[in-house]
Length: 424
Image (tube, rainbow, N blue to C red):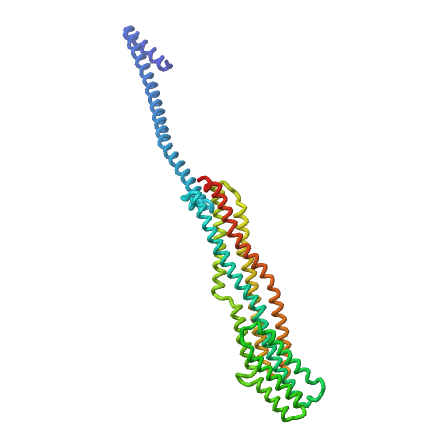
């Protein structure tokens, strides 16, 4: 009880005692104290109840919030986990191994290996056949040019220049009256001999008829000899024989020089046709390269299947065949391309030889033309001799073609026989 309460109670008791009602005052004081104690206890009870209610409400709110947020967090984690898994699957499907594994997933291993075996055999046969045909065409063309076409063009050019120079030297002897001088006719005789030897050398290297040309050359030589040797003391007969020889040499269309010129042009066309790379040859190279690319891809796919399905990391037969395939895709193409360039260069030299020999007609031009033809002929022989190593490349290509057919069939066939065919 506070001081105010004590003072209030004491004052009330004093008034009550003064009024003469002591008992009644005591009872009222006790009742008032009881009511005040009840009020105080009620206030404390209400405060505690309110505090408990607030605490329960806060707890319920927190619980509800937690229970409401937990499914969201769980759903979010599941969503992000699904996204990560999906992105991981996309990255795996975009990788080369995963992409090819997905494409081959519906095939059984045995059927997959059998299909690869058939593809390897077909691609290898196509590639080897196309390589063989393409390389054979270039090699045979180079051999034909070296053995027939180039010597024929050179021989005809040399023969034409030789007979023209022989005629010039013989006419110079008659005009200067050097026929009786010893040793002055050796030049034209040497030129006639060179012309005759030139026709003899090209007789078995051309398909053109040389009978008429040989007959004209023999008649021309006879007339020239008569004019310079037999009738050297008879100017009229000498002039008549030299004129006859000149007519046999230069008569339009039927003379020796026009016939030799026509044969030169025909022989040059033959050489150009032999060297030219036609659409069939270019198509053969395209087919060969595409077949080799398909073969290499099939080999890589087979190695992948053997490693992924059969647990075999390496197959020596397929690895050796793959290395040979890469070499066949590069070496024959480069080698035969270089040989084709050399043949084109030879064709250009043969055109130059033909042009020089047909343009020269008289005087010192004939000597310069003969020197030019000799130099160009040496260049042609040198270029064709340098291309002799293409024969070894051709033989290597033939051997490699056989290996790319046999090795993959052995490698995949042994695996199928060991794992599947023998178990039947």
